[in-house]
Length: 59
Picture 1 (cartoon, one colour):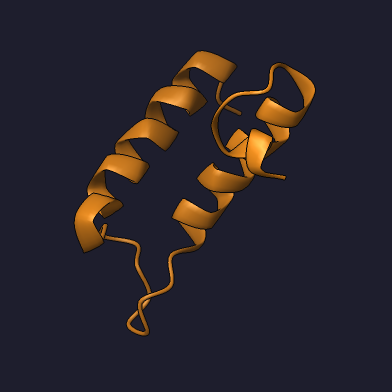
Picture 2: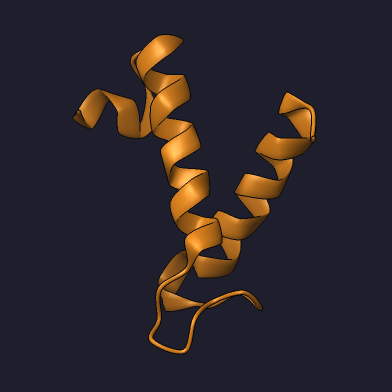
């Protein structure tokens, strides 16, 4: 299992690959990406428990 810093860095790389409509190597043919969804969910979970920043403040 990745530590929190390594996971955060990986999530940021995944988000950067998808910025502007890009796709990563794990994107499904239909356009959905489970890897990106997991990264966003982790960010929302952290934001709702740590501080009111990022996507968490939208919830």
